[in-house]
Length: 115
Length: 111
Image 1 (cartoon, rainbow over the protein chains, first blue to last red):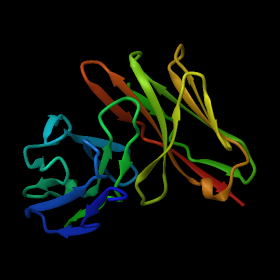
Image 2 (cartoon, each protein chain N blue to C red; image 1 turned 60 degrees about the vertical axis):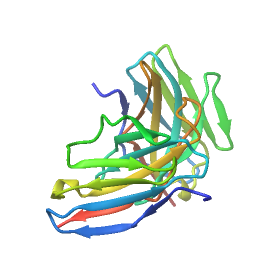
Image 3 (cartoon, chains in turn purple, orange; image 1 turned 90 degrees about the horizontal axis):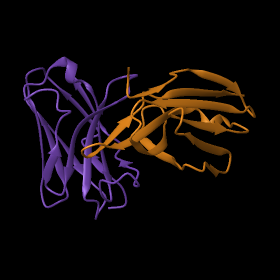
Image 4 (cartoon, rainbow over the protein chains, first blue to last red; image 1 turned 90 degrees about the vertical axis):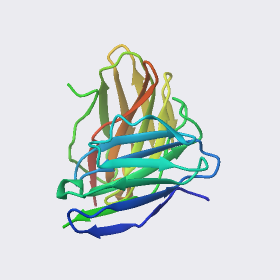
């Protein structure tokens, strides 16, 4: 596609439920990243994919968080047993490859609210 | 100490003013630098890369000072539409590339 697409754009869920967030990166971009941003805060790195593998998942805050990427394209971030502190905007970005020379293109994010 | 630090602001300036933001980084092995812009409740968008020799894009000038480990962004003749949060991004390669986003500097340009 022309840009990075994320769905849903907004998600309200009850505490304890599982949620799945989807990211469709720019076609041909091998590197894919998940970040989250709490209100008024900076970006917090979650996980990086190169192709279908995740060489860096150091930012996942707990084992309730997992992510996968299939076909070198679409990625899904899953949060199990959601907690109120999980409320944030989850941003996906992609780049041509993981290199110091390429900037990221971000999707418009999924705003997650846990009530 | 944070790896990338920015003055959170906000900077409140009138239209037409010149405003400058600095961003300091702690890892001397950092090798690439970018400025992103984030509008309220929107995703960050790449504004410009920062090159060692400095670079300019219209009213925007980015500079890198490796000796003092900071980068800067200068906005001349600021417009109302420049109001946003400006994020500094630093990429280092120590055992793998690592990208660090600063927390951002908020700019408000007033009429």
